[in-house]
Amino acid sequence: MQGIAHTPTNKLSNSIDFYQQLGFKKIAENIFTDGKMIVEINPERYARAGIKLFKSSWEKELENLLDLAAVTKTSDGYLLSDASGVWIYLVEGEPGWKAEPAEESFSALGNYAGLTLETTDMKRSAAIYRALGFKIVFGDASQPYMSLEWSGFVVTLMKPNSCPHLFFNPSMTYFNGKEGNPKVIARVRELNIPIAEEITHFNEEGNVDNIIIRDPGGYGFFLFND
Figure 1: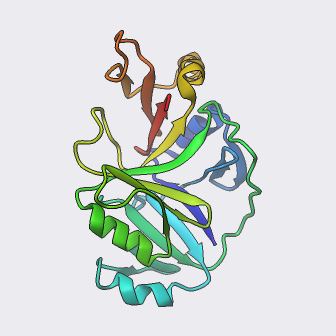
Figure 2 (figure 1 turned 90 degrees about the horizontal axis):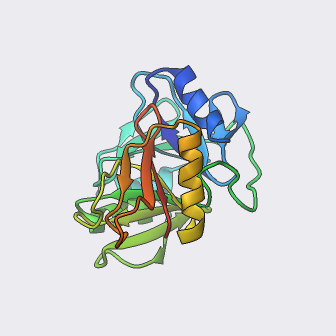
């Protein structure tokens, strides 16, 4: 079983340059990793930002999913979305590549901490991920956020009005601490990566201590200090 990020692109070369510039390594055609997260860049014009889950068969999970979401049959599996609107690609079969996880993420973005989604219906989103086999590892649907895990792939769900900044569904989250994140921000600036938002909300002195960037296909990245 394998879970990866799935991102569209405005132009394939733009997305490849974005990830390589940040230090992601290529492991197969249009597949990149920072040692923790694996990203597939999909140049097809029908591609949408979301997640892709690989498993030999999704037949068992479909029984419960059909009561929670509209499911579309695809050539290699199924497609649905949770209450956040994020597309979930279910692929039947193993990926045509292998990637050994590193002890730490090695990109310029720092310490990878999973995907984050903002949803208007925590209970339904959680129910969909649990129907897929995800297990709750933190919080529950009554709290502002909760985290679920599937084969090492972590998704954190956020309630509406919990995040006082831009939010792109879905977003990869990197937590680098109060001392480490300024270095990450400085490196992003040095690489001339466009910054979608400089965040001062959490800093009493009004300093930029968190930033958000996006890849060319619209996938978000939260580069936060905690």
